[in-house]
Amino acid sequence: MGRGKIVIRRIDNSTSRQVTFSKRRSGLLKKAKELSILCDAEVGLIVFSSTGKLYDFASTSMQSAIERYNKMKEEHYHLTNPTSQIKFWQREVSSLKQQLQYIQQCHRQLLGEELSGLNMKDLQNLEHQLEKSLKGVRMKKEQTLTEEIKELQMKGNLIHQENIELHKKIHVVSQENAELRKKVYGPGSTSEVDRVCHIKHGITNEYDIHEPVNLELSQPQQSQKRNAPDVVNLGLQLH
Image (cartoon, rainbow, N blue to C red):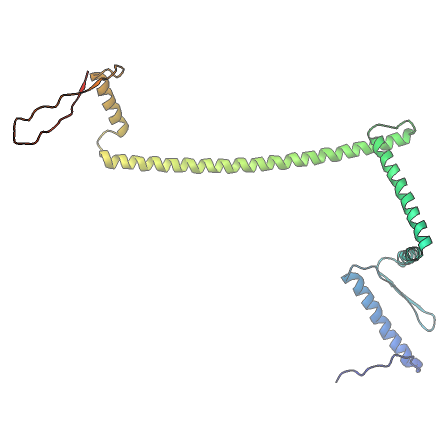
């Protein structure tokens, strides 16, 4: 059976009222803690019992939660009141202008300008800041160069592996060509290269390869047999 609906009103019996307060207070504190953890919310809870006893919970600190609450309440009041809203934004503009002027002055000082109004301590702080910034820039530069070197080394290794694979393929093709030459010319015959060199050497001995070659067409010869069809023979003569 389900629980019956409880009427929300003051409990007259003091004992029952105290027991209910203790149970619901524990549940309320538990829910507040779970809400702050699950939702990353800043939670502040304050409970006073009928006897004046204080029970509280804060996800960060109660003081910061109260200060934040007062600030938000004041801003809400300024935003809802037109006169206060104008004054609020005027103060915001003035504050932003001051921050901008301070940032611009610091930037000029970092560039070595407007240093006349600085004392020895300010100059030392500025020097320390510049050294710290320069150290950070150098570290970033070294990190970038190291990453580029690693990337180039990886590319070099990949190219080296590709060269090794190509050399293996060339070796396999050379072996296949050698096997084909053995099958074509036989195991005891000369290789194709030797055969080509031999032919070239023979041609060189018999003819002068640098001498120009003239080609002429020979006259067709008459056939001895009259009944047979005429046959035209074309011959080439070297001079």
